Image 1: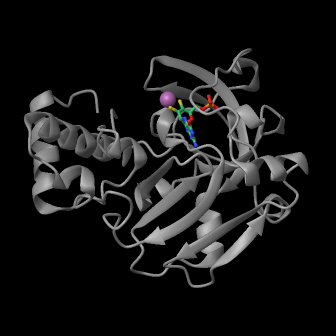
Image 2: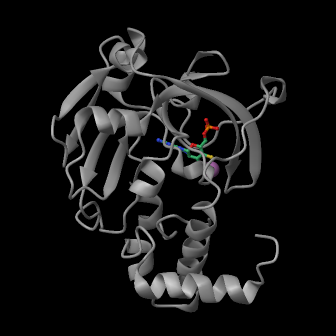
Length: 246
Ligand SMILES: Nc1nc2c(c(=O)[nH]1)N[C@H]1C(S)=C(S)[C@@H](COP(=O)(O)O)O[C@H]1N2
Ligand SMILES: [Mo]
């Protein structure tokens, strides 16, 4: 990798863009190429995918490296009546619906998810707003849950909604990655409310905003332009590109 010049990187990713060899190339981020910024964002996205295809796992740390303080940001206590009721009973009535292009749609309780194979990983979280921290996350790989319910062959994106109105979409490159987990545990305990209880996503190869907290529903889709304003995520609707700031 070290001998790759910038020129080779650029021509390489250009070729990938041109031939559409790269998964997710016709994704919304690359279909709005109106300004030079859009072009550079699309190119960054393509280069990131190209490099990450050769770097399967992000770095995992020893438990001794866990940050003493893991900051919280944005929503830390959702102001939603149903959420508050569920929180009052320790989320024992909580269920996660999985629907869309799925062979066996269903709804899963925390107990159901805890019975599935678990993965624990100590990773570096980098927030696009300028801070980072190391935490340990335990949960079920999203790939396992999707295999359990059966993705239909047309499914190309996973759309996830949160209790606080945040939502985002993920191509299968990220959704099926072994370190993409639905976490119910943090630093050896159960996931605290301020960090997204009862369930949050960890998408370790992306910046912090992509790791949705307070997950309410999961859907599999062929396209994402039918959701919201058609830009693939809440942050995109606020003016940042889908997969902003990679
Ligand atoms: N539902 C929801 N998910 C979210 C957010 C949020 O406000 N609501 N903030 C995002 C951002 S920008 C970051 S950096 C992380 C922060 O997670 P933390 O509060 O556990 O540190 O969650 C992400 N997921
Ligand atoms: Mo963030």
